[in-house]
Length: 67
Image (cartoon, rainbow, N blue to C red):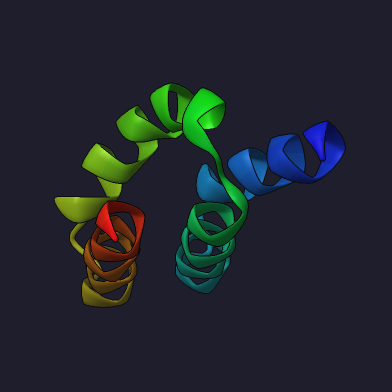
């Protein structure tokens, strides 16, 4: 699990927007309470991203985390 999450966090810093959006979606599906603090900063950055695909993925993933 640690290898997968570190790989997804690396993808969240990628310059390719689709990689970032997909990494956000997957990471929010597999995360638990211990990882939430680590990905919070990435989600905040993604919500205000200039690309609407990344921002939308972050917003939808945030809603899924609340449920």
